Image 1 (tube, rainbow, N blue to C red):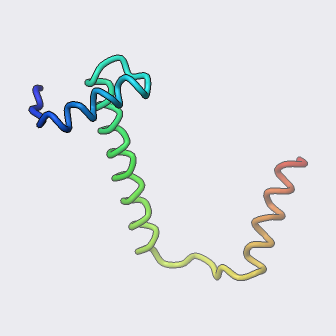
Image 2: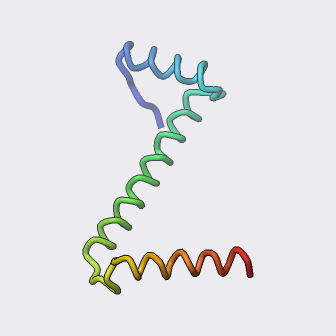
Length: 76
């Protein structure tokens, strides 16, 4: 795949490659694509969670139970 960039973007990519330790511009672009995939996946999870029905009321007792469970696993 070939991508054409205006000189200003090419210069930016070149600076990112040299300053952030990428071996090539392709490595930099692959990393950008992976990050975008991760963001898209997280957005989907957040939207699915927001649309799902509440399983429990998130009151003080709920959070106290969560903390107790974590303490039990840490000491268990």
